[in-house]
Amino acid sequence: MPAPPWPADEAFPRPSDAEQARRLAAVRGVMSEAGVRVLVVAGHATGRGELQYLCNAPVRWESLLVVGAEEEPRLWLQLDNHAAGAAPWSTVPVAVAGPALGARAGAEAARLAGPSGAVGILGPLSERVGRGLRGALGDRRVVDVGPAFLARRLIKSEEELAWTAWGAAVCDRAVATFLVEARAGMREDELGVLLETAAGRAGGQIGICFLATASVAGGGAAVPHQTWSRRRTAPGDLAMFELSAGFGGATGQILRTVTLGGDPSPVISDLHTVADATFAALLAAVRPAATAAELEAVGRRLIDDAGLTIIDDLVHGYGGGYLPPHVRTPATRHALVELTLRPGMLLVLQPNVVTQDHRHGVQTGELVVVTQDGVRPLHATPRGLLRAG
Image 1 (cartoon, rainbow, N blue to C red):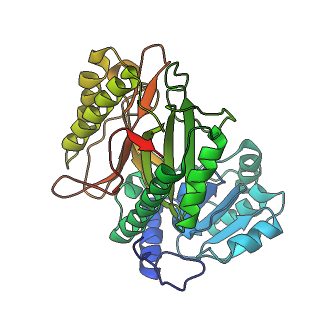
Image 2 (image 1 turned 60 degrees about the vertical axis):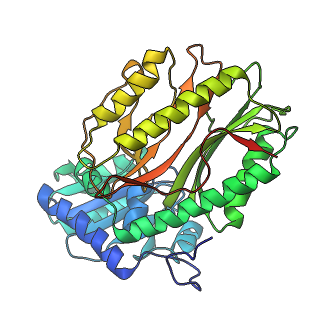
């Protein structure tokens, strides 16, 4: 493992003061452009990208960060013990709001905004908390600044990329351990715990660990699952996983398909050949000024035209959350929002090639960064269909 990009003796790693100031300046720039005097940033355990980006706190329950145009931000949490746990990580003061989170944070936002100032909203907000917030804000104008701030977050700083590269190394270490220790006969949930534990032993925090197993002959799972089953594996079965791990919300992300102590079936070998070719074509297509439509065209040529399909995205943006572009194939498209790639963007290239009946599938891929000259992969794990044990 490389040395982490923070002081070796730091118990609660945070971004540098300069990096944190850069992020705060970026969000205040968005506030100024939107004409808002104060911003309320919402976050919770599975939707805290913007909030953690701005104050480093790994919140669990729904929380609100209040950012004034000039005043020091303040993070509001509902529970005293959660506030005590978040305080060592947070780069801003932490306060306890109790059950009336929306009303308490909203009252502070209203005070900072003044009688007629507009208030910006960023991040996921529940109806209950939102109702209390709106009540406290009265008839002040409320502006959604999410799209504008998201556009700023797509381009990563050098410090963000350093933290992310360390997270990628954590993922690679976890996969290497998995390939040695995973065995046919283990339950699916045991395999998931093995992967997560290996990432933890490498010093990382888990972002996600999706995993599914499938019969070598009969198939049955075509994409990694968010919740593991207790299915018992047999020799030759497949394990497919999507792992993100790192620190402070800056994680690598890697996807692989692994056979458990046996040879893959012909259908799996054929699917993975297509997946490998698709990944290589996507990697070749990523460069500054490339478009989401160009990436989608790779999926049409290699997957749709071959009579195959996908369940998961073909490509998505990354870094502090699940970001644009969200690219599928033309045959599976939900909506294609056009986006031009720029240096500093993080992308996950992740072809999930599946038979039309969704009986058999494979997935491979990993995190890359768009550079001035093209693209740089962040992971060192071998590509292709891997074999454990």
